[in-house]
Structures are given as C-alpha cells and as structure tokens.
Image (tube, rainbow, N blue to C red; front, side, top):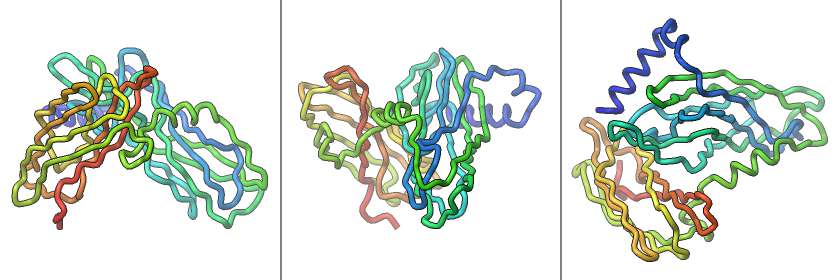
Length: 284
C-alpha cells in the first residue's frame, strides 16, 4: 500500500508542471564514456553520474517502501549493443514512519558495457544518448528526469578517459555468488509456485571471513511481495528468512528472485554479492 500511495503522489507531481517546477531539484546528472575515441569493434563503457544533494537519496532498482526505481535507458546508433545496467551496492535507509528505502546518497554511477560494430567509418562522430528518470527522497519524494547526450569519435587510435571514475565505481559493484571470489557459501530452502503462492524461505550463509553489518536486499518486481525479513549472524554464519507471496492476480514469470547480500568487510569497505534465490523449477 505504501508503494501504491507514493506512486500516485509521484504521478501527480509529474502531471502538474506548475507544482513540480517549484520543488527542489536535488539531483544533477552527467553522461560519461570510458573513451573519447573508439575503434571499429571496440568494447567500452558508458554511464550516468548522479550527484545528490545532502539529506537526499535516489532509489536502487528496488526502491523499498517509497519512490520509484531509478531508470537509465541508453540510446545508441544501429549496430551498437549495450549490456545490462550495473548497480553499485546501495544503502538501506530508514526514514520517519517506519519507512525503509534502498538507494544512494551523495553520488552513484550507473554504467553499462557497450560493443561497437565492426563496420564504422573513420573520422566520424557517434552520438551516445541516455534517457534518465529517478525519484529523489527526503522529507518528500520528487520525480526527476533528464535527456543526456555526448559524442565519441571513430579513430584508429582509442584514447581512454575518466579511468579513475569508472575504476572507483567498478570496485563498488557486487560480485556473483558463483564467483570464486564470493565470500560465502549459500544454502537456500524454500519454494513457491503458481499453485501455492506463498512460502517461507531460509538462507544460510557460511562465511569464509567473518563480515560485519550483513544486510539482505530483494530485487522483487511487480509479481512478488517480500515481507517478514529476519537476519541473524552468529560467528561465521548468517541466517536470513523471509516470506515471499505472489500478488493476487499475478503469476510467476521468473525462475529466480534476484537479491543482494550487502556487508562490511574486514577493511571497512561496504561490498555486495548478487544471490539468486530459486523459486520453482516448474514455472511455465
């Protein structure tokens, strides 16, 4: 219900320009590329940098109890291919009224890998565009949007730029639980299907090195409600439990629930691991 109410309020702000123009604008956006020039067939990165005013935040791909997911849609010329948006590890943010949001404060960089086609004419210019939408939340939630554009030249020599920016945010991307670098071994119990639309799930994480401040963030879509999340840690083991329920009138369309295990490592850095939760092996 909370998300529904906030969605209606944001829709109202979007559709009443005179009201939205008078509201604060706490977010600024810039489009960035990892190169200034590309070769035909080259792989490179593009991204949108969000700069967020103090005491405000924008949403992760699951906003939590308020706001709407941040959206970045890259528009590339024919023959260019962009991968999925890469999301740095977000924060769990508590707000008055027992509201829990998943998002970012101060700044975040949402990027994607791009491959250029093999057939490109040298000494031409390639436009790179991004359509961006977000909600910034503080004492209220305000919608924002931007259309961003930059260009890259085609050359037989590629010149990398903004290496520090891309490297900084790449270190803040979660790794997969299947990676040899994963800091834990996960065991998941639970099952949900279209005949039994609600189930208890239990996750056990056996850590290779004891972490601090373990958190779990589900990336549920419009089909599933995740509630009664409980997290307990004892020595080198973390237990996570929750209830997953299919919303009335909805059916499962995915085999797995995307989720993120966030934690602080021994060096004091916040890190994350993407963990897929199997829902049912017989989804139609």
